[in-house]
Length: 307
Image (cartoon, rainbow, N blue to C red; front, top):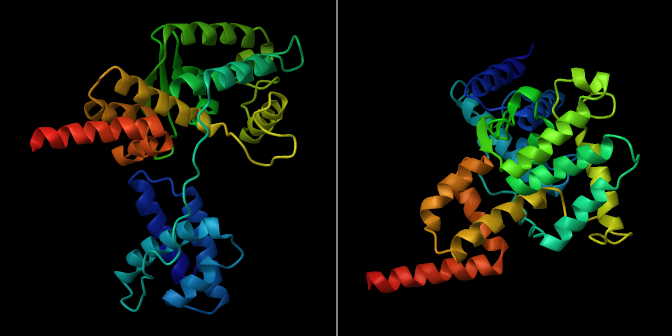
């Protein structure tokens, strides 16, 4: 193993020991070290990093690739002072796309369409109906919903244990009693089949395996076109992840409309959603004009009180 690969191996083990998954970053850094060796380079330089960042990759990935190498370069610079750490901001982040905020009518149509999926007597329709419904009422990331295991779902207590989250932290998510009833019904249907009954997954395919994210996306896109959320020719449109955005915005709106102290409640919503920083939850304020208006009114009232 070359010195660079040894340094990378040590770096990844150390960071992962602190709880960071570094899945995509690990792949990027392995490619970067391979690229350095192809160039017969032993010292990280800014020009080398910039050349690699834009090589065989689209602009959306450039900021992430740069950030991964900058962190690695800091680590390497401890033992190799000639290491250059490229400046941040060389490749600005692309603007986060505005989410689609689903109306109650759209959500109803989406769930009805999922429940009408073929085959008429199969589990498939119930599986996709429950996955989409659970994301809608809890704001889970769709990957978190698909990774649920039987032992993570306590329907007697109405609690979900969310593991393998985006930032490596587990959390407990309570569900409403009506949601628990729907999930209990799904579990009963699932366990009528011998293969599915043996599965460790909560949401299963027809033969007991876990659901693939790409299959969920394909079904969602097909159903979205069917009910008019997307045109037949459109490659882009409302996303599954926008169900999470809609849940967060609806929660904030409900708090504002009832006069709740949103500033005090926001950390609870951040924890519920699995955000590591409250600022990630504040972003939802900009996603809805009504939320921005509520927030600005609260700010104006505060300034008037202080003055």
